[in-house]
Image (cartoon, rainbow, N blue to C red; front, side, top):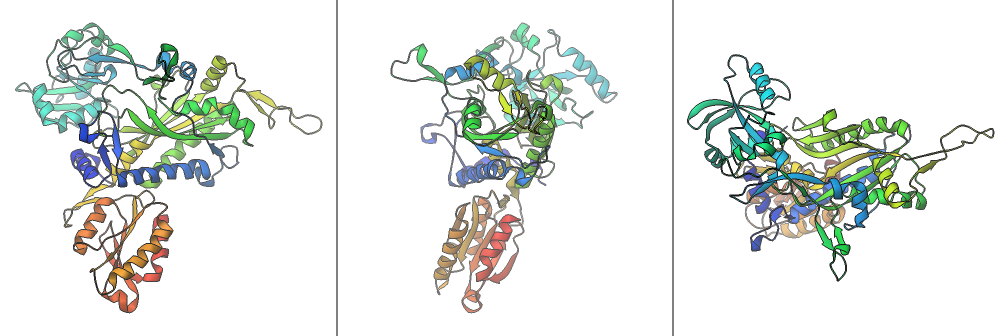
Length: 566
């Protein structure tokens, strides 16, 4: 288990650039905020993650397990367009409801989501009774006259506290110094900071700034960008969908949207899938691809981007069985993330409280990971939602299509022993994962420092997702060693090249070559040396331990097969 709180995000981002995991999009032109490109290693890492999802959710769903009904889980894929008929987004509620309240800073011209404004509220010393101080503060923050001493933009109070503690420039801007976080008063309590505020010792609770305070007292709220009051506007609604035009005229009638999620493509093709395949409820339809959201404040590297990739499954089932299926998918998706290298205390499964649920949902859980920029809190990797029959009902209503399912396995039993059948609108369980966030979590989890090594940075990827599966090195570039290395490299590439790179390199010292592979996350290196030419053995070196052993050269392929499947 790795401690996310001790991993500097700047170091992780530097390694990602240096080793070709992630680049700033359009970098030679100064970049573009909220967009990222993947380099050779990053592209392969994300492909391996996508392929793992595809194999375990579509080709062999849930590793061949049976679901609540006792039958094997069945799923099929679709691939739907980024641009759909605009009525799709009217039916789904995105056109009318996919809005976030935004706040502008009139001085800096920066914009942020109102629900991301976190306030530092100064309180009395918690030395006497911190729980009482917290209760008093919670009772005050919703009042319009209670203004935070300083503000930070973040996804939640824990993230805001982590940002403040890590950013010395922000502390200086807000008049804060010597800040540290105190132990939590109770599970889920607001972060409590001990700090010096404008030269005076103080304690501050971090709470979201309420909508009422932002609406009615926005002129008094200090800006998160300057620390000064008077420049923030009241929240205003802002639609998060990108739009463009089809055809040559570019009139309002030609307006279309870039999809904000892949899920709706599944719902609008539900009837076609049922009519053209032999699937029957319960079954799932999976879809992966690019989605777009006009995030006002993209941040935290690739975590919150304007263009991102999703892997979503819509699992359709009978209403009576839906909650059991919800629990099944919730638990499996947590187990799946653990299986590819995110096991440990950095990963949690969080059930939403009732006041967090969407109006159509009867249950939602998030798989969350403790990123360095959210620590000690967590950020969402995947949501598993019980969506009921909301989406199919909406699309049936707006399109006029009949989307009910006729289930021949249900209903009363007829005299001949057959079932009468039942017609119903299936309920849907949606495990919706972010592949960019998943890749970022794998990178953050893999990043390890071992100061005892000549090159201390190591990427300890799970072998299944590692972008480089193996490396073959001649100890020296002479004496027949390069030729033997080339033959072994060709054999391993033929066998394992489908799932990742197999590298070979004859330059620099063997120690530097090992270090390069450690930084790239290659789990095993095989070295051809003088003994190889006499006894047909090679040195195998483990990335994680740095230990070396000898194995027969004709056993290398079997060794690597077993290691990658472990």
